[in-house]
Length: 154
Image (cartoon, rainbow, N blue to C red; front, side, top):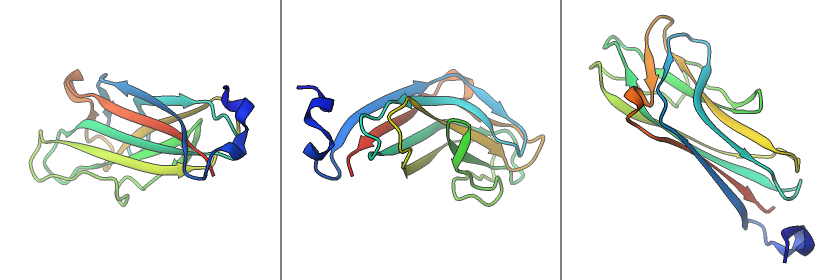
């Protein structure tokens, strides 16, 4: 039986209605305090407007080119609007190191309320702690980042 036939009330709160997963292994470079795309994006079309969407993103292969306190932050957008945007130097989604060429991963998990049944795109962006300090995501095309969108009944 189709989900729309059952109706929204057929699902207890917290039920996962659908899951969409996307990955990328393409390296991206970030050397500005302005956020830019990491190539990690997922699109979900909620079945019900009352649903929330749980977004879980794991940005892998994050490498800082310099060993002098450089770092980065990962932001999360719905469409073109930030729903999570830490400051490049103050956000809790950071990776700092005292040694260059170290690899790390950054995670963002957020429960969003898009209030729509239209296709909704989520993506991550990265910003460097300092302008002109290089930060890579999916460095060398050797790491696979993943983003998962789950529609959650309310």
